[in-house]
Length: 348
Image 1: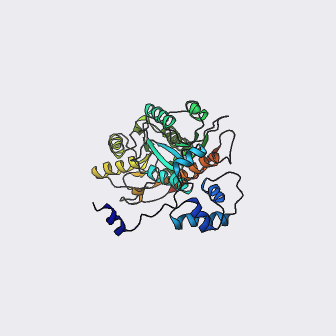
Image 2: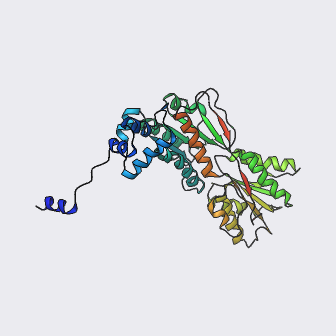
Image 3: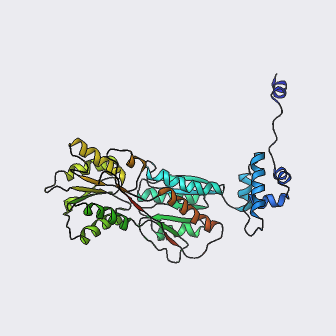
């Protein structure tokens, strides 16, 4: 048996630091350390003292006991993030923003993927009710405020990210939105201003389709232009959908001279289809996308698109959630608008 000698040769196992150790290092009481660790509401502790305590925690490598903390505060210190498709490059940036805010408060983030399906959205919220989470940030295509009422009544805070303004009435359901209708209008207006009068659109089969399609039609109507139904082709928010829809658009007579795709993934598929057809972009066909995913600036020609600043949106949604969780906001739901920007590049 060599366990004893081997252990001594390796040195003694280091004892885990305690709150008392942190208090001694920071020169404060252990009670004050506990207040800072637990973010106790109403605690009157200066920012300098709080920072000194956090510095001492970092120097000592102190880690709060999450289980004990949860039992004491009746919180899980977990938030759920519900999104339609983690493979869409928009959502990892969105989740990074959520995580930025959560990490500052020592919360974990659990991500649920719904594939934009109504049944899956319902299943996810059943799982959240069973497994518990302090709050939920959700991008939902189907569930309404009425559907979410039981979750809210069970004490779980919810913030939705929406493509257009939504009101929650008396429910404590907050909403953050980017005006997709107005953003789509601006994108199509950009094509009109560059001389295009025959503009096709590739829409998704779910999600913010209505708002972006309405924005497309708003811009055409404003300019006195008409688009036949054949100019509206349905994709799947994936490059394959954009590729197939572009193939249909190229068969139309008279053929459109520009395409507005409801997301960049489908716009990239459209670029591929045009390249295979030996059509030049933007000379033979201009393209505008939506979302400004990382690949939009890397393809040739680079993609003109609309940026929704997903990381900022995710961070703000999480901040709104924590404002309720921390008791800084109460009452009926709030709705907050965030900005967008048309990013002009080579494709249009």
